[in-house]
Length: 284
Image (cartoon, rainbow, N blue to C red; front, side, top):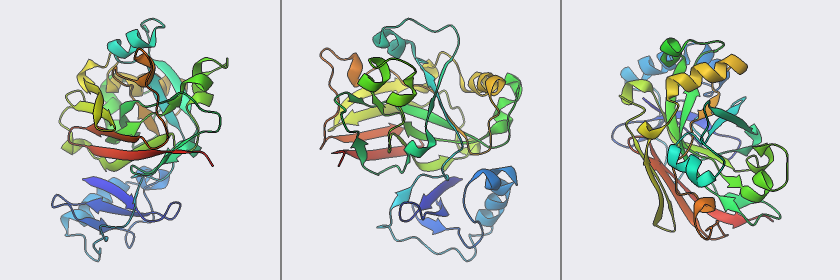
């Protein structure tokens, strides 16, 4: 299945994307795709509703905005330097264990919403990533059992302000958490439609120029290990996100760096999962 949300910012409704491209409103059956939905077996109920033909569900007008496919999560956990080529371009060594940092949940954004360059920003960067959506409360999960805790996968872009992140001291969070810095979508794709999360091409374009072009199989720390590892240090709740890292080609790694400017168009995609499309705008 492909879970979607649609509607005005802050007033999104749940739905599904059918194989023929139609978006179907599921709000008559489900309140939202949030922690409670996943915790109470919502995915199973939704699958039954879809199998029965989406009874009572109206088609969503194509002009209606796409929202992030789940309600704002309690946590956005990110994995840094998880692709060797990106770790090398980052210039701070290759990690021997997963590097964990957080993005504020207030950075949550829809797949096609504008990216706001923060006040004082001069080093706005992009990172296409595979997102893992947690489907059940996870604490001290064994790696062999990790897939039982995954609700699905999606496309994620970890936007960063590198000056805030690297040159102002302290932790990375302040360079990662500005409003709109965590777009995800267009769908949550359930695991039955993703035969191998480590066999997907992922890419990022800026103004139609391919900047990143990699494979999820190049992750140094694979998805089951990441779910298990993160769950050692914090309880993952249904609907939480793990962003699994990015391949090389980010703006910071270029010589000279090619940071984003207002007016730039960014496209991020993952094979079989869909694409994000954003326009960079100046903070006002």
